[in-house]
Image (cartoon, rainbow, N blue to C red):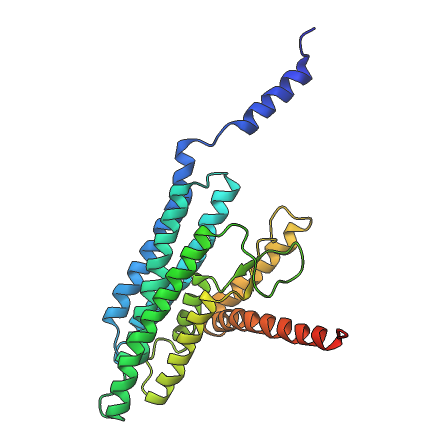
Length: 286
């Protein structure tokens, strides 16, 4: 006997499920990746034009990096939802990240935090910090590129300080988050460059520490367990809308809290794990 209507329907459904997405669908994630590159290129052009007299250029560069973080998250999400992930897309995304979250923020950090220091105040200290700033901003770029290379070749990487079983974590701070730290601080200051050499020294330490976190093996929350397909998607949508509204109204305060809060979360996770490990060693009988 041949298959009945229900059998034919199930075969049709299985055929649709196995059908690969159209070739045009593969372009969609790459369009957001192209937007990522465009935002990075725009940030570079704005950084070059910025000055103490025209700080708005620096602020626009920081905002462009912030929008690029959004594009970077969307292109991966679209690739997963449409089942259009490809080797080409992954390579293009990595190259885009080097430009937008490596070159652009390192250049912005140097010009905003070191290059704009007044020539008259502490001239010797200014020269030393400026030269050291070039080196540290370059280190940030190399750390970000190394973080991407490690991510591309890793298969199921595990952080040195593991969290809850079954929960996914990033090994080291992702490069978009590192770029977000730099961009959020500059946006918080509305682009007004640093004019005190002592503050430049603090800025240098922040850049250096952020670069270290990117190449570290410390765990950072990935957020991959969040999905619109979960049991209460409307609650998630409500939270996203609320956060978006807060960013629109109070972008300077909200973005710096989110960026630095994420940085601190990785540090606290590492300290908590080390503290717990010491307690376990003390409690273990010899």
